[in-house]
Amino acid sequence: MDSIFWLADDGVGLMVLELVPFLGTPPYRWKRVAVADLALRFRDAQRFNGAQVAAELLAVLAVIASEPEQRELVARKSGRRVRQIKLGGQPVSWHLRRMMNRDATPYRTKGDLRVLDEEFDSVVAKTMGAIKAALGLPVVNPVAYSYPVSDDVIASTTNPDLRNHLMSLTGGGPVMTGQMDVVCNRIRDIGPADDAEQVIEMLLAGGIREHLSAVSVSAKGRNPWVTIVNPKGIILKLPARKFEALIDDVGQTKRIGEIDTRDINGGLPEVEINVPMEIKVVAGHYESATSTLHVVGLAERTLEVAFSTSFLLDADSAVCVYLALRRQRLDRQRFERLMDEAETKLSVDPFRHLQDRRPDS
Image 1 (cartoon, one colour):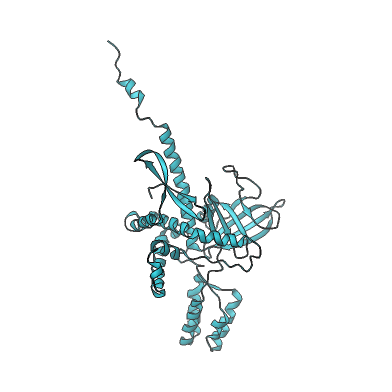
Image 2: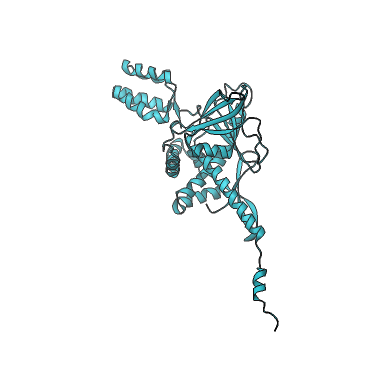
């Protein structure tokens, strides 16, 4: 991605600006990039530019496509009586399909859309595979869906052994995507075959995404922020660089920030979290196997754990946010270097003219 991009708020979500020279030469100006143009660049990158460029473009597309939805979820969970408000945004592949098939989508049948979703699932998996491996993340999104073992699922078989096994699963909560292979194989082992396949079909049909936390990006000013809210209504706001660090160093506990302490760069709080306890420091680590961000609040005087919570993150979405924010930070550094060069550059070197002069004879 040779272009210098910048994420900016547009009132509803995010837009992408690109640094371009005015009339082909400096000075530079920012120009908004159309979504269709980004989608075309992504297609080209898949063929010509390599995995890193394609992954970054996919990430930018996914983040700007999903941001209005994520902001709405955060806003709904920020009010009163949030217990009955459910989360669960659409997956990255859905947003990518919507961005790249805008005109065709309304005219598709459900069967066609199912095939398209599978195709875009494959595109996301292929594009993000190398990035996930480099970050130490599982290739399969471990919490993409949760599958409740409902009464209807249990009632779909009359086999007592299978019913007892299904009832034992209810105590552990919904089955996650990363567990489904093991769970389905165990169901098949217990059998009988017809009952097992019927149970698996019903289990898969009940997949939901309400367990996932919403992740929103605010790109106002120089320093982007990430807001995360879980189904319990706990809201964590942290600088983009801290979110990057958590994904960069999987499993490593990081100091996210101090409550009521301002960031030296922009005068913003280091971190915000809506808990009633008096805490001083917020720390966390990202667990890759379950795509869970674990967060603790340390008491002001003792620095002992006074509060803990967790945020299940859609792994594909988390990587997209990470890549988009990382690209923004690196592009900002490139932009500042470019501006420094432009401000210190002379069209003519006066010292060369001095050297060319000859003394009078």
